[in-house]
Length: 235
Image 1 (spheres, rainbow, N blue to C red):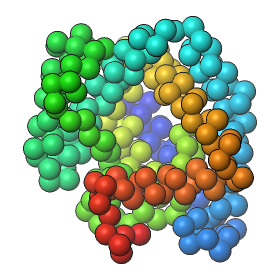
Image 2 (cartoon, rainbow, N blue to C red; image 1 turned 180 degrees about the horizontal axis):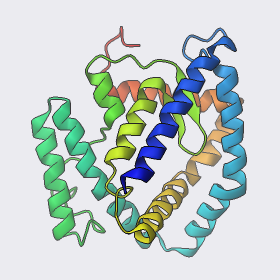
Image 3 (spheres, rainbow, N blue to C red; image 1 turned 135 degrees about the vertical axis):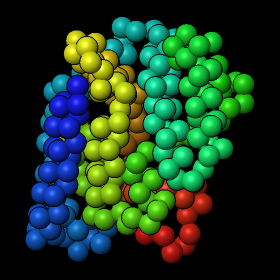
């Protein structure tokens, strides 16, 4: 149970350390001081995505009706509300934490294990929090930008946060291995399918896809850390 998540957590931390040690091969971009390393990792990711992830996601999208895909997304999003609640509590936002826990309880019962999102129409706001944001909330700097194959864009802070997210992930910590692996695979494919519409936007809008993804990620993360209202002095 814990062994699998510990190995994943160790991998993310090791990759983060490798990225930092690769700092000698830098560009002059202060946001991305290890750009050479990151572009290599991005190309590895693109290869994996084009051969495995994207084709499987396209097949999933073609076979499953939209209501079924929505139900799958809702199911995993509902599980994620537990982690969101914990992080809101750690960030000193108890009211949001209670709301997140309320969402989980309502959707898990009246929403049939979260397949239906009953809480949103009921006016209970959904939040988006993780350990990377929690570290940022308490003053941890973002550090170098890091691109991790399969996991995608991160910062040093968010890479450490990812290790904590994986360690605390209820799905990754299921005892029954076949069920755990099935759920992890289904979640990964469903998440990639949700990103399919963005592929065309990026292809059409970006002369440099790597830079486009990096800049968009950094801007979004800054906004999330400060709940949509970052100070002008924010990193």
